[in-house]
Length: 139
Image (tube, rainbow, N blue to C red; front, side, top):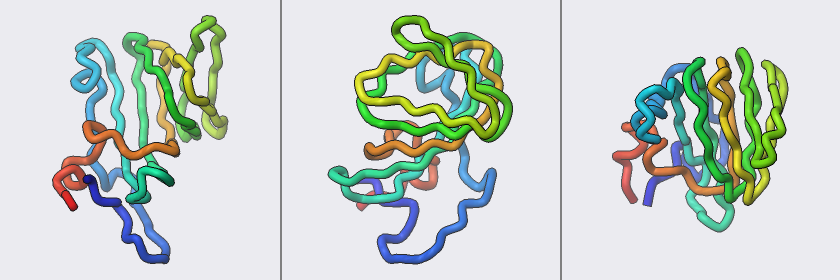
């Protein structure tokens, strides 16, 4: 089981920008042309009440799709994120905008995306998205 990035006791935690190494999406998705990065940071240890924080960025490249079986809230912090749903409805989010992905939703991340986001999801961290330092901590 992966340990939480933060302690289980109360308190305030500061995660400095750039302090965690993100993972290359091209390697994780096996799409060499894909330019983007992702990082999951587990905030809780319980799978029943999981909460994960993450960083996500895309640079102009190719589109890719993912099915969300959980709730994820992406807050665009820089640039723009362009997504489409299974009906090909296009959504363009700019810095300050929020994208909410509900369970059982196909999301197509458009290749014209060029931005960064912070996200929260109500599911345990994805092992392959963890920072190498966090991934090595085992309970």
